[in-house]
Length: 140
Image (cartoon, rainbow, N blue to C red; front, side):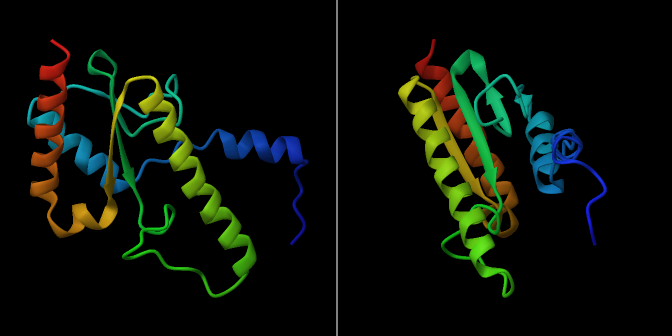
């Protein structure tokens, strides 16, 4: 099928999509219920962290096993392999660049794998809360 949009029109359309995963929303609601206050997907921050607390210089990313090449559960599609290898490896490189950026700026980064949440959701929520409490204590 031929695309009926120009490259510029397609770029504008695709860049306007603001998808959030169900898992990300579930985590955010659980943290909010526990009294944690934060910003979701703050586009003013590099890499658009899933959760950020500027006051304490904290960013949290919830990484999908597929899109971020989880070493345990990451899979590779069977078709168009070269495209997917390049795409997924670029995602991993970008994750490294984002983490390095924040660490160089004195921020603390926490990355959570999708499978960690699926295996022990409440444990990961407590881990995130403990992480925020520990880091917020350092910044007082």
